[in-house]
Length: 248
Image 1 (cartoon, rainbow, N blue to C red):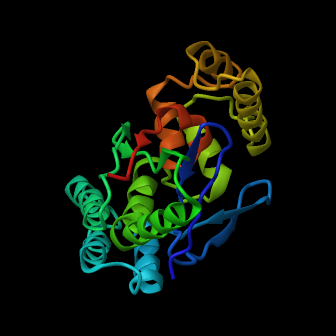
Image 2: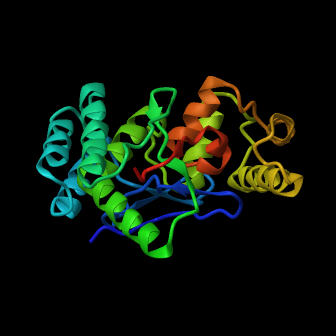
């Protein structure tokens, strides 16, 4: 059964963030060691193996279209084609429309669709719950596994899990020193969030600028944004999340 991973923010809207790992299954992670003997979790030893794991574990939660896309990816070294990526997102939005909602506005960052959005909170709890269940169903059936695999192919060649993947990407692109660690990234992210939260105007241009300047890397750098978008750092991309009015 598809699990609903959501991050709910306080304020005038709810920002819904989809986990970069599968929310429809329990993709296993393998363990390797770095030169310093620190354990590092990986989704798989190769992108093709990751795709096969997805198919084996989540084929019953995917519809035929998404399953066929994953099968084609397995035959292509685990890589999802851009055409199939677009097809999966179109199928997701068609599912949303078929359930009686307005389609989700889709926003790309460096070719990656943002897996998050802002939603007004002026609806009843019952209506909100129904929408979340419907949206989660469309997501899992149509696009979530494709999203995970496509993002990994674009920004996580070592298939690392969690913040290790973000830090690895930032280092690989020479956006931070080689000494930059997961702890450093966590501190960056916390500071960025606190600056916005304490401002009282988290989406004001001056607030966003101040928060961005507190980071150890340039948030406007295209390579940095790709690292964040492909590896689940949604908290640093919330200002780009589209506002969705799903109810007609």
